[in-house]
Length: 154
Ligand SMILES: [Zn+2]
Image 1 (cartoon, rainbow, N blue to C red):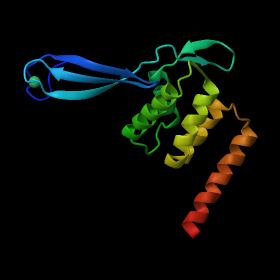
Image 2: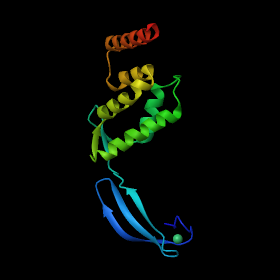
Image 3: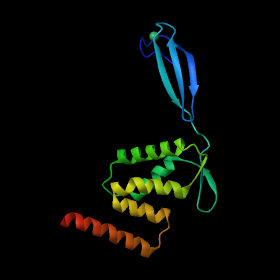
Image 4: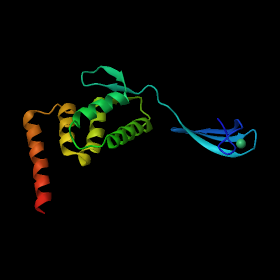
């Protein structure tokens, strides 16, 4: 790592501490003796997702993003907001320090974030993740539409 102060010197690690989520390293520049601290995130490489049918696959941020984008198609949602959301979910998943998660749990996390952003995208995602029956889907849709009406009336 290059020194952030003089941008020339190589740095050496003078102290290293590890907790469950990060490695804290005290570094010193070998050229100007500037000292600084870095926090390095510990990568949890083997986060496995258990799918509804019982099969497992490695967690894929890209796949999650693709699902969310599909649900938000033609909705007035900013891509950056969705990316922020996926980043947040990824952080929450990794900081929980588990090595497996069910697709259902991930779905619930997405729904929590998506509901306040866009009710329609939320519903589309709900129907996919909970495999809602058509009746349940319509019921929930009506509820959201009523909520929107009451906001307009009020
Ligand atoms: Zn330096």
